[in-house]
Image (cartoon, rainbow, N blue to C red):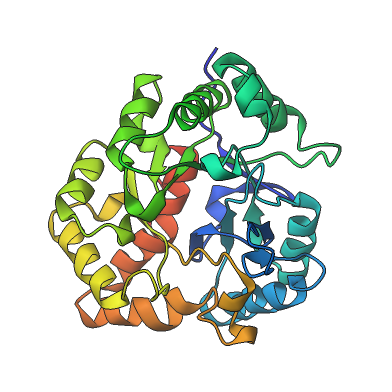
Length: 318
């Protein structure tokens, strides 16, 4: 049985009324993370070593820009720690939505090899309904469910199908990881093929794909197009991101854009000289305003769209 979309956001500190989110959200971030495959400790946000800096950044963004919400897409196999997320959320006084799912194949956990789609769906539904481990903390989104290349591998396709079925069963939305922006159309085909409506899907990392035609097609089909690596200059310049974003806006798809910075290693933190979670607000949005964006458009991109994605429902203007 499919469940209706939630009327409130499910955060790591409890339910939050959509109407209480009056400021911007970051639609794809990591506050606690371990993707270290090289042993150098770079792709890590350790709850012991880095949580204070993460908390301080979020609190400062709440004070300066009214940051209300972070969608935290660290899932199974990525070093997820929802107890640490709850501490950060309380201390920063910023709501945090936790996730469940599986990342792309190099980070798959053993149950993916042995389980079929139905079994993997049951794992996700159990976390969503009963909470993660013994924490009692329930995910509020599926993601970042990943693939790499133009077509998902067989294990990645299995995980995407399980994610779609879990989303349908629980009323949650699903965010993907499309490695370097590739494979988004194939992801959407798989997810909608399982019956998940496109407007409950966000296709990740599209600001890394220099293909406005694909962006337009994803949006025209109803999916959210995530420009979620803003500030990661080693992958793409913000000048190019802005060009791609403006093309999508000019094509009439402002209501299908999500924005974020995807802070995924401690070197990206402001305290370590990185761009930090605030790069979107301090650097990129001023550039978008200079290109003609008004307050209503900024509110749409940074508040109403993330809330609509998470709930599947329309959100009133501020």
